[in-house]
View 1 (tube, one colour):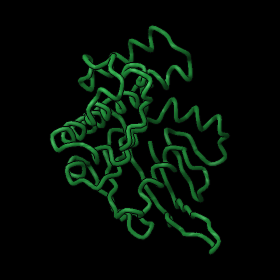
View 2 (view 1 turned 180 degrees about the vertical axis):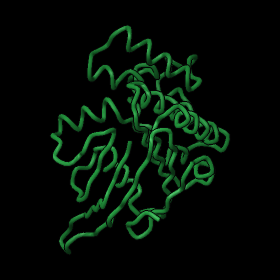
View 3 (view 1 turned 120 degrees about the vertical axis):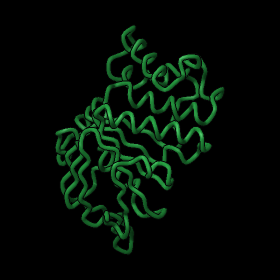
View 4 (view 1 turned 30 degrees about the horizontal axis):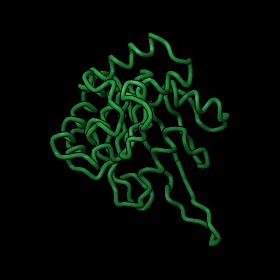
Length: 219
């Protein structure tokens, strides 16, 4: 589901720039939970942005959900992200003026407009993450763990083939973080390709493989 080959990424500045990814090779299969660990500033989030079709300024080959990313138009990249890739971020990125259910529905609404089917699907994934009773609550009335579960439900709403998570348990207490980690493992067992960037050992323990990003290369 995810194939990166020889991926290089340079941040340019007046001194010529800094190469943050130096020939990264990565394969994540369907049904696999893979964790990437590394020091702060090592390029872990940058790698996710490349794999998630959010960053197009890179060298090398990237194929995600069967689609080669090089040369895709912005519209095609946006369609791929909407239909095949789910994102979970440490900061949740929920809209404060919407309820939990409406936040989950948002990717589908942006593509197809609101519908009863979208609402029903959003209710299903909220139930999957244990938040049926919080569907009407805005983010301000949710705990950190509940907000993260809403963010995961939103990522799952469009039935993606790939799930990318950037430090998804970093702001959570131990018990809530363990629950999120178990959910990722369950999703992988159901066939998703799950790639998680993390500093946390509990996430690494649940992964099928743990890769270390050091000096711009995976080891």
